[in-house]
Amino acid sequence: MIPRPLLKPTRLLQTLQIHTKYNSRSTRYTTLIPPPRTFTTLFPRPEITGVATSCGGCIFGGARVSTMSSGDEAEFQLTSSTTLKIKLGDITKWSIDGSSDAIVNPANERMLGGGGADGAIHRAAGPELREACYKVPEVRPGVRCPIGEARITKGFKLPASHVIHTVGPIYDSDRNPEASLRNSYKNSLEIAMANNIKYIAFPAISCGVFGYPFDEAAKVALSAVKEYTNDLKEVHFVLFSDDIYEVWVETASELLQK
Image 1 (cartoon, one colour):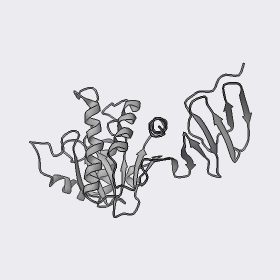
Image 2: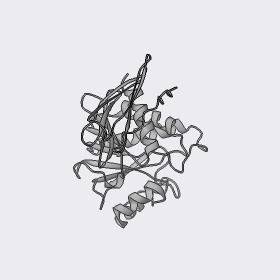
Image 3: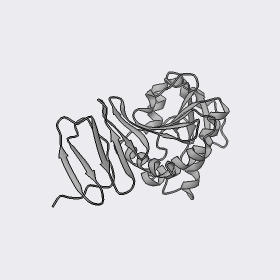
Image 4: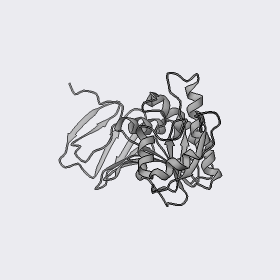
């Protein structure tokens, strides 16, 4: 008996050799070497149809998903004038034009660097970023940016022109982690628009050592950018792991195609 394919689509890789067509009546497996130029993967819900290019690609729930040498990327339309892009990659290397773009740093309340993406962003930006953060006034001793709020500095040695610093919640200790995480996205978007930023890139805030479950975080993040994005040309999520990328694309397909 041929096993039923998993309902959770995974990324198309260059080395993929088995392509599956599934519907409620039949299941067909075809092994092709090398991968073909076209493929179709159909599930009862939602229907997903794709066309692969020489670098690989597909259409995921109405969004274009392409596998390229620079990493996977999915694209959705947030509004008539704003595009959402979800990709695998290194956020410290992200930039669009170097003048109206900003990356979001998942900072701590001190804003002086730390581990994970926070530390990587500080290292890539150079010591000038820490100096700029040090000049941000404290709202209380040791706290320059409270949980859910956002601050902005220049990007210094980063390709992006600005860094927006926000502090996400620690999932197990925050009294209302959903509200705090939503505020991180909302306030980051608002400070971006107030500073004439047209392109912004987020990481998966609080999904590292802060322990926020990926599926819950994706719903909060994507619903927040859908609700609060105005006057931005593009909103990006630059994600560091396959697992987070897949959850974000799947959630976006559910939330943004309604």
